[in-house]
Amino acid sequence: MDIETLKARGAMGQVLADAAIPELPNHYRGKVRDNYDLPDGRRIIVASDRLSAFDRILAAIPYKGQVLTQTARFWFEATADICPNHVRDYPDPNVVIGQRLDILPVEIVVRDYLAGSTGTSVLTLYKAGKREIYGVTLPDGLRANEKLPETIITPTSKAFDGAHDEPLTPAEIVDGGLLTSAQWETLSRYALALFARGRELAARRGLILVDTKYEFGTDAEGRIVLADEIHTPDSSRYWRADSYPARFAAGTAPESFDKDFVRNWVAARCDPYKDPIPDIPEDLVLETAAVYIGAFEAITGRKFEFPPQGEAPLARIRQNLASCFPAAQRSPA
Image (tube, rainbow, N blue to C red; front, top):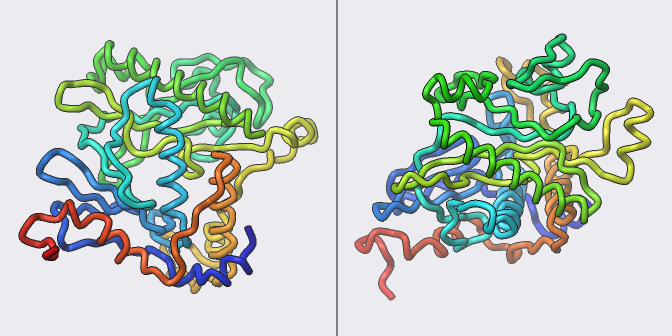
């Protein structure tokens, strides 16, 4: 996929920057998703094309919401035998209707490699001299991007209202009352099994699933259910398997789906936490869109299906969700 093809398709005219639908109840606007809670216990999740970084919305990337929704769909269907998930229906390429859950206060990240750049990543902590990390002891002498001796779970507190995630150990999770011992056992068993399936299927596509984030909740019966998204380009790190050995030996960064063009461009031109965001060039936005589409095709092995040209995405989504509107607000047949 190249940006000239995207221009020819009128990609910039098919951006879903906002997914506010007044006919739907209980609207909650997240950074990239618009959510609606229906009276019958279902939740409508509309993935917009908003790109979030630095606690701000930087741009809207054409087709990003569809890529994330359809990549997650591929993985939800490929892992449905491992654990229950929240999915009820896909009425639109950008929309999943799920079961409303009580989200558990622990975020799970499963890791196979010493990688990452955030303050809670194993590489950052390892470079700072820590060897006891998330309740796991790592040996000395590991190099950046090296495969870990075993797959590990690195749980963090799930931050709300602008707070920061904090690393946790299993003992802290249970002793602190965040989860019961049985819940932690189920959560960790599901997470490791999901990651193993992801690693296996990614390898068939010539990819390494490096690490990934999972979010779980409980339903009305107390069952633990997989929520949010799974193994998408935004929730997971993938590397190209064929080039990894040579790059690791040379000490260079593994080849990945580099989607951070916009983020890096903005950070090079201003303090993105304080300054106004400069106008972002169209070609940069389209280059990012092309990477997202390429990631979908590489991860799933499926051809990306573009929506019809000239169709406004919000109008399409409203039409596809009309059956969810309260009866008084539905158009007559």
